[in-house]
Image (cartoon, rainbow, N blue to C red; front, side, top):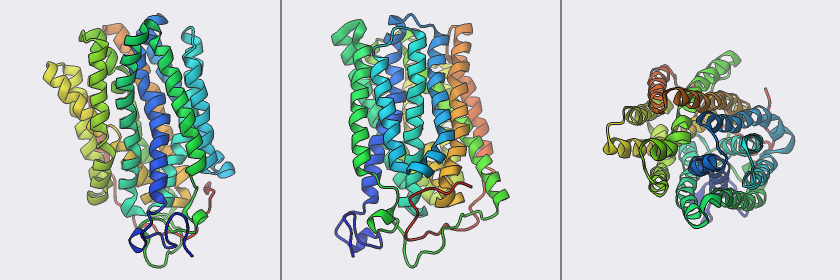
Length: 431
């Protein structure tokens, strides 16, 4: 018997109805739009005005960013257990509600400490929403479609950057020094609405609607990891975690401080810098789908190496400051590669560990990612305070992504294709 989401075997080609997996992707895109795009990347646009109004130093700006990542890191450790008890839908919805309330309250912040605490809690909400959302891809899509699905979902980040790049300067121009406060409150209200939508639309597995994962053919087998031996599984998790650490360490240095660099060091007007940041969002719309589909075709190892090479050039150009053409190219490359590593990582975890271990595995590699995010902005802020410029921090990021290319070259292929059960459990297995 059919279901509201499509036919029983989950193959859209056999039914005129769209597989419900694409509803999951759309809702996931809205979730990412909120928990990463608005809650994290809008910070870069709001930071110059907020920093000036609250008299924040470079080091305090970095510590606030680090507080957000520390909260995210805490949520990463907590997510597999909450998914086991509550399921993915409830965990995601709870995280979105938490970050929405905290963002609204940041708009009423009066100093460094209150904003730091609230942004820490925002990070917890972001982690509780993002990690389970990435895991759902392994339940709703088979290996050959995971990269594309994750990439389309992560395009929500790019839309959020475009949105904040247009909205925040407009508010600052209309409301003056208090524009950043309205910015946080508006973004929080949008996130609240997205939390409601996620609660209504998300489902933890295709089995809830009588479906199979999109792309599954024939008789599904046992839900077995690609690497059946636990020691091998642990080794690949550490390898993937090291790659994610390099990404987390570097991409938020650029993402947090590039607008401040343009305004404070390059003498750009805030409106002009906002337009640049909107271009990052535009190019990043293609990031996840492009590199996700590329990794589906050439493998996760080749995909990782290609992305880290693009990022190395972007960070190097920002650090060397060859002129405006170099800044244009740096921003374009950063946007083009922005969400590609999370896209490939989401697919890779499912490929190597299988759906049953995806939640725990993704939580572990994201812990590495969160550790990198926590260290990156603080180090960059301290270095910038000592040198008076962020150029050295960008060059440090370029060296780190260069090392990541070499590290990715040692990544091996999964031992076997993952197989799936037709009726996956709603709750994640905890090893």
